[in-house]
Length: 573
Image (cartoon, rainbow, N blue to C red; front, side, top):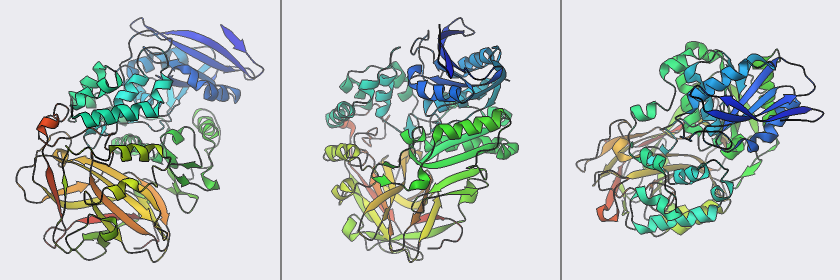
């Protein structure tokens, strides 16, 4: 059945046959003012295709066919939804069907953020000749930032699985922040194993349990992502979009790096945009979120930018003006977009700041310090006892306060239970652009623990803005494929190289703050898998297996700990 307006004709619930006979349903949006055959845009969603109506209508209004498809087992599509498993073959079948339609000239581009961005990377695995460009936005790399990061699973995965359970949309339960905060806090207080977290929301998920059966990186997670050969064979224009505060930034950049590494020619075809956005903002940009306010240069016409890209990649249009070079990124604090030939070229150098203290660095108001040249003092220490559930409420309140990037209540409440280091005030405005790294010597008196690191700008008035963060489970300090429990109590080297990308002009007089904390007390207390530190399978352990662990961080000449700060050209510390 077709519905036509003066600008767009819509064919509703069109059936598309898959190779196994399953029928997936799509809405096909065609421009009424442009005769075919013309290029088409494909978006495949687990959130039911209705949510794609505004963007699909806009693409058709401006001259492209857009096809919005319910993935297998969701919406009106037949079959069973198995996240991340089914999309590659189904995308191939849809691309081949779409490219053969009379209204399409055989060129198909893909569109969509988050899971829809992941689908685009999955689609390259079957190498359809119809696929002419992809624009993966906020796309997770499975195993890197979904459903875990730093080897640590996220409870909110059970929330996402409930959101995509069954055929119908589950938006109300998925967006009920209060319900999920209470459920996660109840699980946290219970002391039960991570496998039971869904019980506290009344949700059973075989997929969640299957994920927990694979805590280490390996063939299971590899199969969810393109192989090196898949990346190497990708010879079409690619536009990766992510945000400085996008939860899936690590995954989006993992895909980007792997494609560039697999194919030297990809450097000329793969463009990258890192904007001033959180995860939601990659699809619907806002000028304020998380307590952060942005300037006018951050105003962004997302659909218009996509349309310009498709005009260039699929037709004979001009390259979008923002893409003056292969990488475009927004510099917070300066309210300007900058450009570089590669992601590595964004950073001119890394300036070392050595961690130092007088043996106590566990208080914001009596912290250790970050010094360009000095490593000194006895080791700093904190004790993490996973049986202590105090503070989960503070963590939850900070998340819903609207100031998730600027709130300091968690850091203040963690006095004595974390390590804090401050730099001297900056003598000039300084452009920090790229990825922080921390090389540290750490000793723990147990087999395992989880670390959460965050870096903040503290301005002259004491206001805080989080710039970057990282997470790591100690057993994965030498790699995520082979866990290595800690034995002995001497210091071991840790390289925290999983910090998120940031770009910020830090004002003269501001300082940097580094926080090293246990992931699972106040920091991310109810939103991270709880490690009882017994050394067993983390998903299986309960409070009965819990043991307190003392964490000691060294910063001596023999065991220096150093924060490496990424600086743009022309900036100095």
